Length: 306
Image 1 (cartoon, one colour):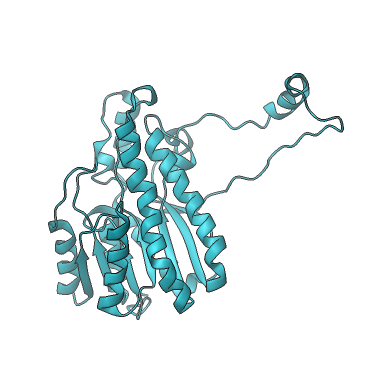
Image 2 (cartoon, one colour):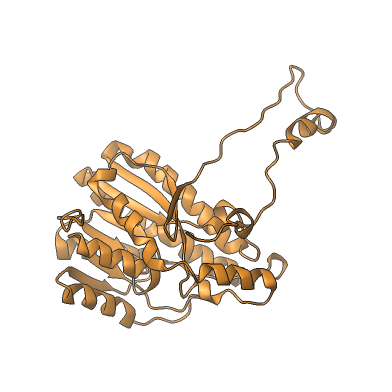
């Protein structure tokens, strides 16, 4: 049964909410009673340009449906803009309760051809920007002794993907950022979780169908719509999820999943200590049976979306 008051009284900031996954999260949160700041710079999937239209359109749709929303066109990769968008939420609605770090860009390139610019701009948006917005909200969360972060990570980092060293590194960094926020902020009743979304979006659509692997990947991804990510994100914002912290979830069409996190799986020891030679002779052979295979995300998620 639908609960239109699930997020009543909460103020939610969603970055990258001018389209795709972010827009669905913003609209669903509003339909459950949240007041929403719809942030979107309106740039291209590669990080170029800006356009105030997307954020304003989504905010307008929320208001037309009877919800409460304002548009923000700040750049999450700018410290001052990140501070301003959080302050704007507080100035407009009196508080901030949830930050959804969803904005992102892609600059795919095989590693030996990746430029410094390709690396820097993706890291600046997809990791630095998440820190900037999260950090801007932290003092408010601390003072009110409550708050919630939902960050979009990716199997490009959690598992791996070809041609995405920049994006994968940033998204694995997001998982690390979320975990440390969860540890540092839990004393203030603040929680932080990640979602790895599987969905066809404008950004995913930039993946070139230049080989059979990418063509098959895009064929599968097109079946997964961005609206399927929003229910889990909204559930994690709610007070019913107050005990869930430091976790990594996945949402893949009608499937929800919980990811493992790195822990030791095999240890070897010697009373004499190790040399390079004894490590080669003893340690590495002992661990070979437990080595993780060098997979890409499509190698792991082989079944069709449900």
